[in-house]
Length: 337
Image (cartoon, rainbow, N blue to C red; front, top):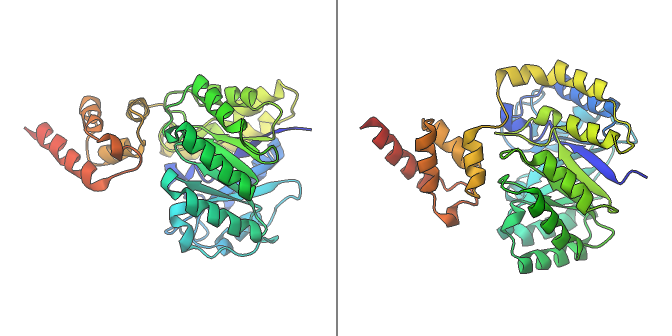
């Protein structure tokens, strides 16, 4: 039995590139291509406000996602993500043939208690629940142990470690996996979501597979690594690697799916390794800061580095707009002198 599952998140994480502007034709083309290439867990989008109905994989309601599930296959599972911060904004219906099978909850450390309560409510509605511990590296050994105990109590379908800031190396992934597995209930699946700011995403995925050998595991990937900044693990690399281990993914279909639907987006928008996103990873901080400062006109790499160095340690977790705006104005003032 295959115990390593690729979970494709192109239509969700990839949406950070193009503001989730995948119309139904493109989204369904991507879903069909992934299925035909052998992927059996597909994330179709994210819950959020502001998407244009019929032209977006950001959904304000589950009804908006239904057109992407009309061609659903019985041997495939479909997922959607929402952040714990936005959880109260949406009415989640009972699981049915019109809904996704899995709901992935992305939460930061201060949101753990609320995420656990929310996960339990989703389980009662019939969903397979994935708990995604954002910026997992920020948990101490005790905090990690306490979190796993709470997770074991509610038994979600899966628990994920998430390299949100893309600052982890293979040895970090191995050590973190071992910390989790020593306590994680054997009936709870284990997953990894990696980013590629320091070009370690694929190496980290391989290390994770080895560290979690014998468990039911999920590895997130996206077509051509589509995702904000440096992006994610390219799903085609995962397929090729797993084929060498005896699985049977069809890379030709996947590459055609890229060519037909993703390549035009890449040619309009760019994702991949860049110095700005490397810098945030090297400083153990949220990559949103590079995005924020560049949007404020700070594109000189030396000035950007200086701006990032001004962020206080206790603000690195998530964007502190007031602090960042003050720094941006200071740096721009220096640039104008």
